Amino acid sequence: MLERVLTIPSSADRADLAVFVGRAIRLDEAAVIRLKRRGDGRVAVWAPTGFDALATRVVAGEVRPADTTAAGDVLLQALGGSSADIDPGFAMDSAWRGALPPESGFVHVDDVPARVLLGLAQRGAALAKEHGSAQGPPTSLLDQKVLEVAGGGTDVAVSMRTVFALTGMGFVPLADGRPATADTDLDAIAASEIVRVRATASWLRLDARFGAVYARRAAAIPLFPA
Image 1 (cartoon, rainbow, N blue to C red):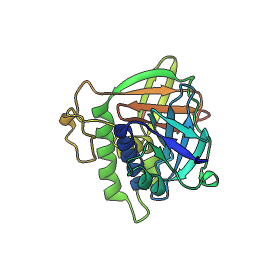
Image 2 (image 1 turned 135 degrees about the vertical axis):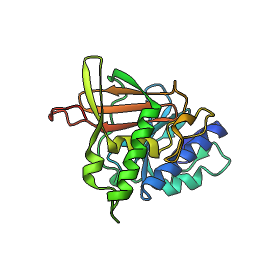
Image 3 (image 1 turned 45 degrees about the vertical axis):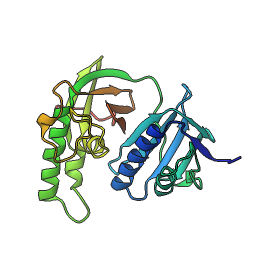
């Protein structure tokens, strides 16, 4: 019996998870993936995005130990097999930085049209191309608060970092079900497609159809309209 094993019975779920891990590696080639059993018995899969935000997908399955880590490239290769039992390789716990957000306690702030967020990402990408360097987009652009959302007794500001993380992971779908990309025509996204904004005092959460991203909130800093 393997001491470390991720079990995902569905081949479709394994394929979806491989896409998720592959996108995480494209954003951060040294990505460490965290696998954690949830209270509902499913497995939450977490990945850094390179934008100070965490991306997550939830799959039906089991993981042993209940909270463990794996190198993204090793896990991606293992997901290419046909077995439901996946060896995630050596634990990478020392390489994981930071705590995970809580499973519950999030307040629904509001829903934002997915077209709005992808439009912000496209304008941000154009500015990054114009003003960026070999080190990537300027920090001032990434840190800019590009959207403020209010509701549920809470006001939250969404930074360009978080928008880039959401769209970079391909979590926004087109009307035909394929993931939107940086070059997507906004009209190809259904007008009814939304991204749900939730928050706690410490975390901001954006839920799209194909996954969610979480970012720390700077709760001590007043938030103003962007």
